[in-house]
Length: 93
Image (cartoon, rainbow, N blue to C red; front, side):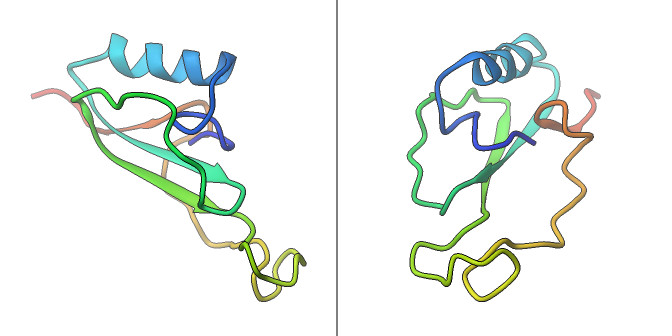
């Protein structure tokens, strides 16, 4: 899980995520990114060992702008790893 970075932004964290995923081709990955409003474009080519990319928008484009309110921050998302990078989907084997 990344905070609006891989694969939606360029820079240090995205480079690290991309190197991690490409450097462990024996694992299957799912990239989960917390994004601003879900309209972000992918900036990276996705490697073959990434099964899915999920964008979790924290704000809606036309909402009230209040966290937790209509159109605000979304809660209840979990299970994507420990926050240090994309979570492996399944070990090799």
